[in-house]
Image (cartoon, rainbow, N blue to C red):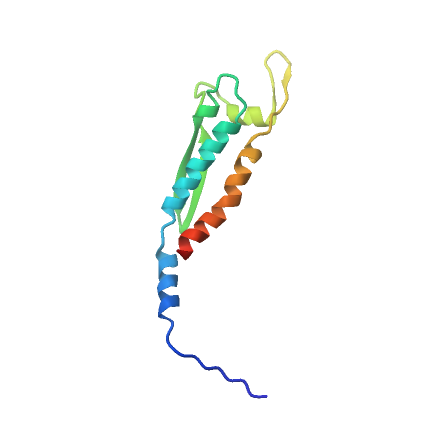
Length: 126
């Protein structure tokens, strides 16, 4: 059995695209995703006073070739606990009562996580 390959042209287009991808900076897309996450968390956080909902912030961190987005809630810095987590997970009270959980973080972030791959791929392939 004989197998042969034939090619015409060069790999300039593929090489230039790979260089662009390797040296690319997805900062624009990650900033959009970070803001989308903040907005989604804010709109899905159960509201009593609205302070916790308005406390969502994001930070983009890069280290060792890995870039990640971190979301945190800086509302109520006077408390020793993370109020956003207490709302999500439920908690005991000082008087012996119990506040049931109101899960909202997964619901808020699922659409963000589902869209990030498409956004990054679209940026790399344009």
